[in-house]
Image 1 (cartoon, rainbow, N blue to C red):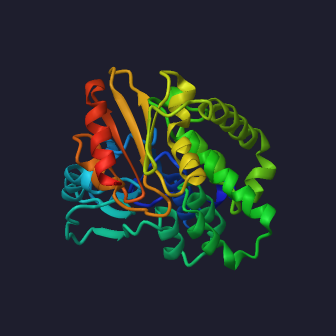
Image 2: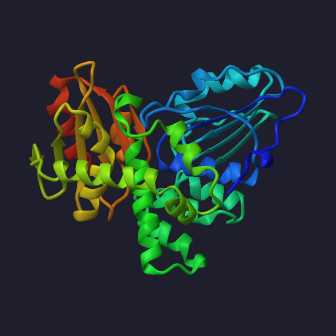
Length: 332
């Protein structure tokens, strides 16, 4: 466990700013980096769908900004501003980046392969030093094969592997919601709970209160979700609409993963209601054909994501049939 005296403040009034997605991948990526380099930093994060996080960054010359698991394309304008202000940026991600700017103060580690995630990229960067956290994140992103492959060098038992899977799923589950108030833990608070532990097994043992709260919340919400019948289904796609309740907003993303695992030949879309009176959608490509989710969602104004998992932040209620038609055409 990292102790306060182990944390090195930056010199010369340089600020370090950590910007990360509030899901398992973003959090576990930062856990790895801060275990490797324990420093005091300002944390900027939010619910999983809050991806334009660089807009919240106010930087100046010599500041160090680390960006994890948010789309460069969706944050390009703010990134350009931060670089112009003289800050250095380390950007790690697995979403479609658009055109990556060339700048002497920008270092990128970006790979859009459908079988990788930000935490696995950080694991490569750190040469496997905290690999169990990367495995946890990969399970959270439902990259089961990739997680198991990464875990092979750790010589874990089946029981230990399942524990990492359960933890990853629960951390990921905690990131979903319209607002932080929907979540069991604010993502920055959850990061602080995890960050002291070099091993996720130590966290699960020493911080059982936090871990058990995540497990119990996930089990209760998933139990309710599994009672929902599909709004539309074929042999290739299935569409589910969840009720307008906090539990449904929390489970929306991982419910899609669970559906994908249960029917790996089928693509799934899970609809939730937003406070603006429209839909938020989580899309999961079929596990046996992990392509097209990013293209489908990006064809709508507030959509984006990666090949195997993507989403739309706002879809008008009267566009339900339009989406279903596009969804069916994409995976026919």
